[in-house]
Image (cartoon, rainbow, N blue to C red; front, side):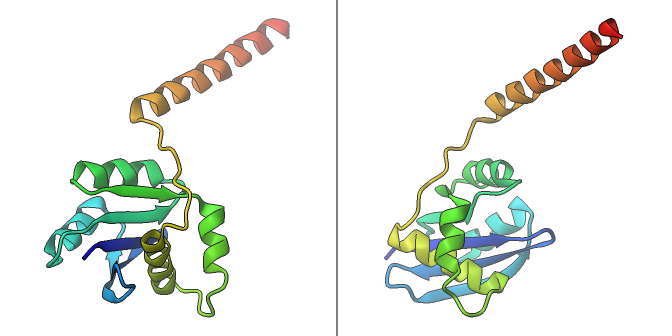
Length: 143
């Protein structure tokens, strides 16, 4: 049997839900948003986890590579698509969102988001800083 994990992340906490291939909920938990806490919770689960899914956001890259380095298969899902799927739910809480994300992952009704490597992201940031500094230099020369 496959076990899929849905994560709904807020600023201070993370709602986690594990469902099996039939859609039955096996674990629901509220955790701190730290990679180690999430990985330890999943390692303590009695069955091996097939995939972990969460919607794209500001810290997705950190979460994606952190959980991947812990040995998990991680999927970052398109936020608008997940939001549209979860909008049909009556109760909108972190716990129910995590359950909905786990169900979306289980059924395969999602589009994965390409996650850029950390090196590519660092290079993009350097190029942005260079462009800003160059613009400041050119503005001073023109004044």
